[in-house]
Image 1 (cartoon, helix red, strand yellow):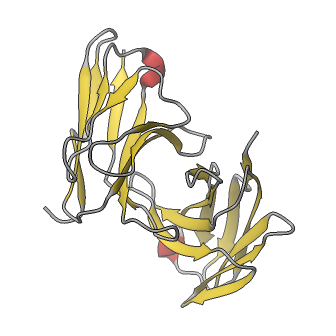
Image 2 (image 1 turned 90 degrees about the vertical axis):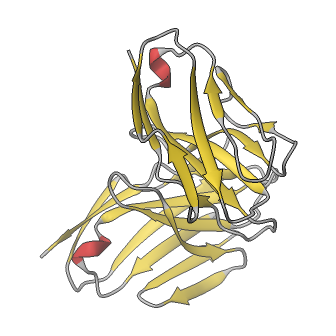
Image 3 (image 1 turned 180 degrees about the vertical axis):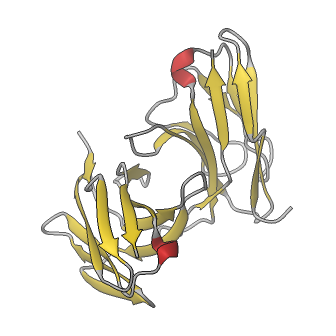
Length: 109
Length: 113
């Protein structure tokens, strides 16, 4: 079966750095997405990786290792508004997105 | 309209009733999707449409039907609602292309009693 694993919850301090990991086992791989979802709101796109390596976008970076079935989202200079759930999703061989359950990130002052 | 909209925002429904959730986008995206999101689970694909006139089944299609008469609209119908269909429903759309992200509507919170 297909599986995306992420930690359920993480806590970090304002101004710090946090890394959210995602491991996947899917039938095929056609890219990995990270989305942010604030409570009660819709998911919004953060990043996309299809090749191995690091993609940097401002305070957020995403890394991919296809051989290890592994990705992480790195958030720097954490702000209170970064408190949200972070969803990892993999596009499989049918070009459908398989979603992880999300990691709830709690930022403390 | 800007982006993707859904209606209603929330609904309480008696079991056995028929219900249609509406989704409209004005971005001229070819692909549209319906997901349900339940606590502790990832988004699960119900149905999708790669282009107007075509639809496909996702991971959890049973009890749901869709139609795609035109590019903009993608309604989701529950023919006879059951309590296990209580969930938050998100509609999404994306332009054609392998690396294109999906844009989500604000969601419909549905409770079936």
